[in-house]
Length: 156
Image (cartoon, rainbow, N blue to C red; front, side):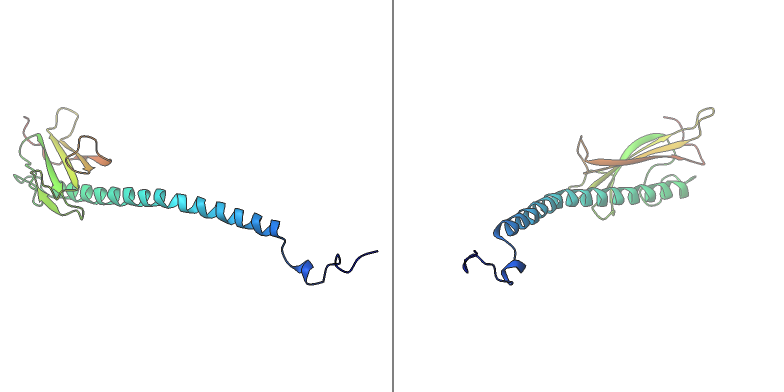
């Protein structure tokens, strides 16, 4: 009843059909497209994370500088005036190196400091904000903290 041409050989039953191969290629292609689509997202997250890490490092350095400069006319590392309440900016490059208090084209990070004299129950403090990129009105990111100072600057 079976013709010899219709009979399958034992080897052909071990192979994949064309439909199975096409389905497998479609699934693999879908997975690769999804993975390649996530690469730009991962790169952006890495860039944002490195910016936030450097800004936090700069912020920690500013806090340490202010804490160790109580009683001095200016902070020892960044030149923040400590005798009077007020505010100003300090600029840093992409590696966190201090560039000075004036705008600099090489600046990546901008730190805004505000010193406040103690009043009544409020201790003297410094509000610090580090943002990036420097010199923009709408930064990509920022970190901030409030530091309590041991010695009060003179009020404005």
